[in-house]
Structure formats: C-alpha cells, structure tokens
Length: 243
Ligand code: IPE
Ligand code: IPE
Ligand code: MG
Image 1 (cartoon, rainbow, N blue to C red):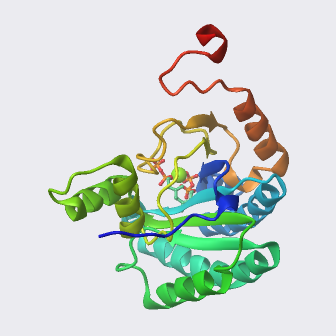
Image 2 (image 1 turned 180 degrees about the vertical axis):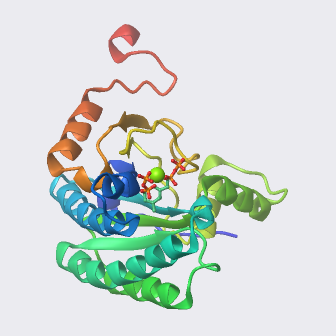
C-alpha cells in the first residue's frame, strides 16, 4: 500500500524526543499526591513546547503514557486519562495560536472513548499548524509498534523508508516517522523505557536528574546547545579526518 503524504518542509529540522519523568517523585517529596505531580508536569510541557517553537525546533515527541503505565494503580491511571483529556482541550487552542500541529501517537483502542474523541478534535483543530509538529505518545510502546508494522509488512520487500511509513500508520502519525536527533530524559533514570526505539537509532542523549515539573526553558536550551556541540558521525569518520 502506498502513501504519498509529503512532510511539510518546516517539520524537517531537528526532532527532539522527551521522556517526561519524575512527576510522582517530585510530588511525593513535597507531601503531595502523585497526581499533583502530573498536573505540574502538564504546565512544564506547555512551557517547553512554547520554548521549542521559539527555538525553531521542527518536531517534538513527548512521552505522556507508556503501554506499561497501565500497570499503575487504577486511581492514578484514571486521573491521568482525565488529565490528558482536559489538557488536550485546553492546549489545542494554544497550539492553534502558536501554529503547532498536534498528533497523538500510540494505540487508541484501549483509551476511554471521551479521550479518543478529544484526540480527534485536537488533531482536526490543529491540522494547519506549520511552526512545530508536536507528537504526544499515549498508550505507546515502541516494541509493540515495530511488531505491528512488521506484521503489516508481511513478505513485501522492505526498505527503511517503507517501514517508517508502516510505523507511522500503526501509530496514527500523519507523516512517515522521522529520526530523533536529541532525546531528553528528566528524572535521573538513564533508559528508554520502550520509547521511539526505531527512531533513536542515532539520537544524541541528554539525561538530567531534574524532575519533570522543575525542568525549565533554560535547561531545555542548555540541552539544545549541548546537542549542537556533539559530533554526529552516523558510522562514518570525522569530517576533518576525511579530507
Ligand atoms: C512520568 O512521571 C509521567 C508518567 C509516566 C505518566 P512518573 O509518574 O513516572 O514519575 P516518577 O518516575 O514516579 O517520579
Ligand atoms: C516512562 O516513564 C514513561 C513516561 C514518561 C510516560 P516510567 O516512569 O513509566 O518508566 P520506568 O518505569 O522508570 O522505566
Ligand atoms: Mg517514572
């Protein structure tokens, strides 16, 4: 099956993936319920998306809820689903004002119906945004996506480009998957937790002990400038050595 969707030129620059971790620990350290940490996390996400737009980042993918997060206590999962629904409603209006296109990646069949409707409305409302493509991963598992795409591929001859399109299809992404350039994880852990495994093949990593609710525009810009200094070789040799 052939998809002829062209990625808008403005989305072809830097892709930043963010594992927004540490909400629960941030809240517990303050004697607050974990859900207060998730609410604070939404405020940080808003600030960082605005900072990314100002910094001319092309694509941001935020990890909001992993497929493994269903294993958390039911009240926390319920609170997260309601928070996601409410945030989509509020944030999609801001996205329109800032020219941000919002896409939700991941499975939809296990989400509450009201959240699925919210996703469809937010995506339709923001579809014309060209300044930044904001992807939010909800009920997302990279391994699950890769397996699903492989099943769709069947015995067809495959290229990376074709496979990227299949991955986009299983994740409800309107465009073929783009490689992650910079992967930021807050909260002190140094792992991927099943996030964008295919797309991070040559990503640069920035890990910080800062809990997500405390992550600032300043630290985001620090991560970007550190990224600019990294030498990316993609298996080759340094440019000077080749001349
Ligand atoms: C990340 O923060 C948000 C989600 C996974 C929904 P956590 O909830 O994982 O916070 P910690 O890691 O327990 O502090
Ligand atoms: C990863 O964080 C998922 C999100 C940030 C949404 P987790 O807190 O679920 O990951 P682990 O359990 O530390 O690997
Ligand atoms: Mg965590």
